Image 1 (cartoon, rainbow, N blue to C red):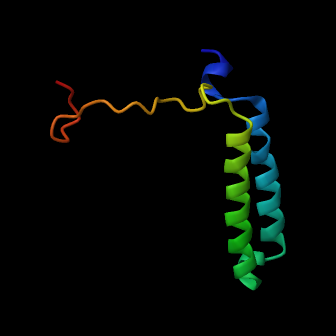
Image 2: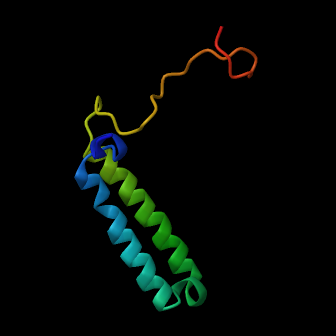
Image 3: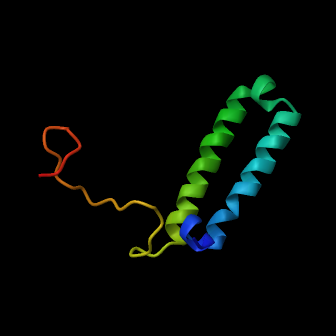
Length: 83
């Protein structure tokens, strides 16, 4: 199995993860999640929104970014079977 089949998306899309990890480590080291919880929660929401917008802006509409497709298949009475 090739790595391109495991790690979907552009290499640019993997860039935010080390940045987020470094930011979270820094916030933990200065105890933001304890001393300034409102700022910590706001920072989490802003970073999450920024990453989602970054992914949307840097991806083309027809480009595959998930492992499974979003096409809904008919499900018979919630059984998980297709008939």
